[in-house]
Image 1: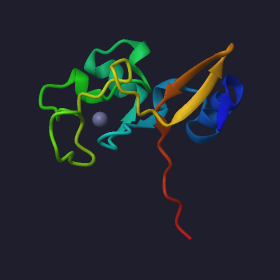
Image 2 (image 1 turned 90 degrees about the vertical axis):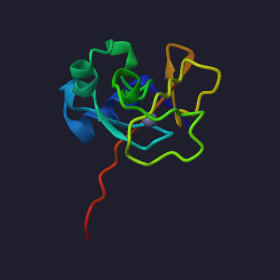
Image 3 (image 1 turned 60 degrees about the vertical axis):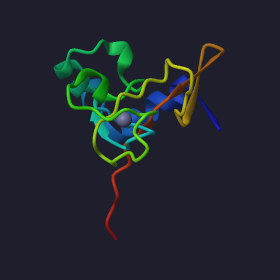
Length: 110
Ligand SMILES: [Zn+2]
């Protein structure tokens, strides 16, 4: 399913509020939950948010396509700008389909 940009933004606001710094994404490879402000803290550009794993900006990182066993929740060096794009969410941005990380979906008890 392809979301419109408006639908995607509405979902983000509903989940995390309107401050984009608190939006949370999940890396499709290592499943690390990354808050948008974590990128900022790590010195990444805004364009990395939802496209690159936070591990690309950290020192001790798993290699997404080299390590045969990826430990879940430990940042990796995955980027969707490379040869393989595993981003699960498709957003139509003015006619261009952009694949992004999924939002973090907190488990709701009961
Ligand atoms: Zn990762």
